Image (cartoon, rainbow, N blue to C red; front, top):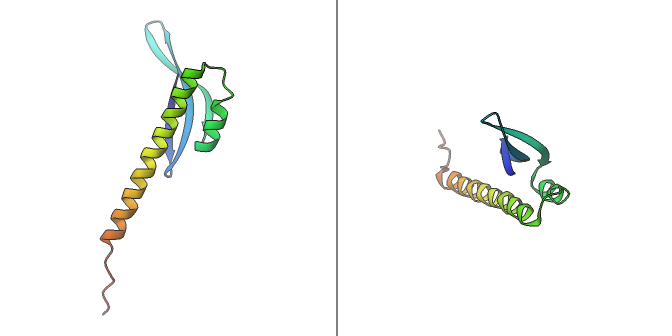
Length: 89
């Protein structure tokens, strides 16, 4: 199992996905919609999967959130430094 992330209007939505092999092909099946960050972590505890797998998935969600937070922060700092005063005519 792994986590799939969809980004819509800069918001991350998480899905729990399972990989199956059928007739020599890989098929990905969405096991469940986890929602956004806080809800995803809470719902992940309800799925009946082993503790190490659950922890790995939880770590992945936190890693994605931390990465997106640092990107947003860098982007906002960049925008602030580029702004120039509007010239008056």
